[in-house]
Length: 163
Image (cartoon, rainbow, N blue to C red):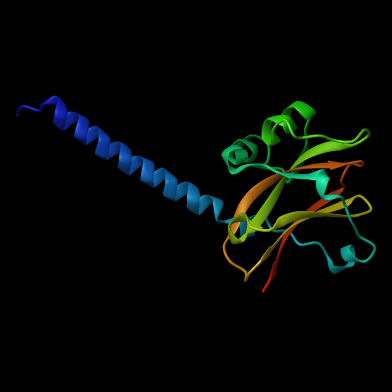
């Protein structure tokens, strides 16, 4: 059987496309398993909790999420990082105030990432919530970089929806 270069190229192209589609599907399904990362705080958390400034929370872009997850958040919910690593994940617009510590943390977003993140504190306990309009849809794993002036003793992740 004589196989020419055109046939070999076509076979390689089809095989590459099939592999690429399979990897995209697996990544999509993996990122949509956000409910595994939800850890709601007890009701008592909200009594006396305060919302922290929005400029203290940054969303890690999905293009860098897998690096954050695989290298830092596979076993930990929140890890302290230096400013250089925070800038790698967020970009040059990352900043922090004097006296703040920077953390890379697990997060979840709903409704395709529409909406925004909010950060609450009660003592040394920290909560990241993603809130968006619409019903409870598919949840997506995410990561955030947080600036706080304390070391969190506990960290919670939640999502909120408004109809």
